Image 1 (cartoon, rainbow, N blue to C red):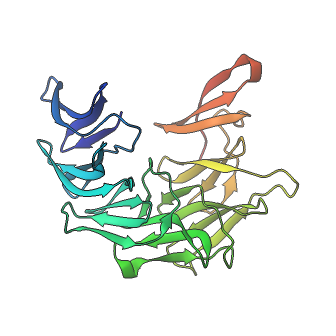
Image 2: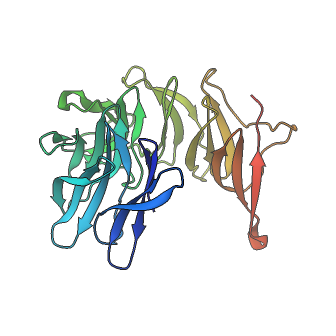
Length: 299
C-alpha cells in the first residue's frame, strides 16, 4: 500500500486480484471513496507523491508498460508513457517533481511538455525511495564512466546537474548508500573497494564537501554505515554495523548517545526509527528472537 496526504485528504492504493486502485477518505466520517483504477497489480513503484498542487503516481498495464500520472483528487490524467523503462524515486522538490528511469534523471511540472529528461546518467538509487532534497535541489549517487559512482546534485536544469565531488579520483567508485538532509547540509556515507567507511557533509560544492569521520576499524572487518535517521530535527542517528552512533549537526561531533537514565544503547541493533522524542530500536537476541526498545537520548 502507498499513502499520501493531499489537500487535507488521505489518499491510498488498494490492490485487488485484477487491478490497483486509487482511493481517498472522504468527509468528517472518513468514508472510503474510489478515485480511479491505476493499473494492474504487479510489483512496481506506485509511489503517491505530492508536488506542485498535484498527486503523482506510477501506473502499469501489460500493453503499454509504465506511465507517470497525476490527480487533482477527483480524476486522474496520464502525463507520459515510458514503456518498460520504469519510473522510480518520485521526489517533490519545491514545485517540481523529480524521478528516475533506467536512462536518467527527469523532472515534471505536471504536463507532457513539462516532463523532460534532465540528464542521461545512471542514478544509483532505490526506486522505491525518494531522493534526498536540500534547499530545493536533489542529491543522489550516479555513475559516470570517468568518475565511477559519486555524489551528484540537480536543481532541475541540465546546466545545474553535475557531480559534487569525485571522492575516489578516477573511474573507481565511492559507493553512497545513505544520504540525509540536515539544516547545515547533506550528510552521506561512502564505502570504497578497500572497505573504507566514511561519513561526509556537503553544501553542494566540491570545496564544501568535507570528511567528518573515517569509521573504518583498521582491521579486516568492513564497517557498514546504514539506517540514517534524522531525529528531533537536529541530529543524525545511524548504525555502524550494529552500533548506534550520533552526528551532532551544530558541533560536528560524532559520539555514542547516552540515554536519559545514563544508559548506553543496546547491542546487536537491527533497526532504528524516530518516534516523537524517542528512538524505536529492534535488537537481535539470537535464539530468543528480537527485542523492542524505546530509547531517549540526552542532548
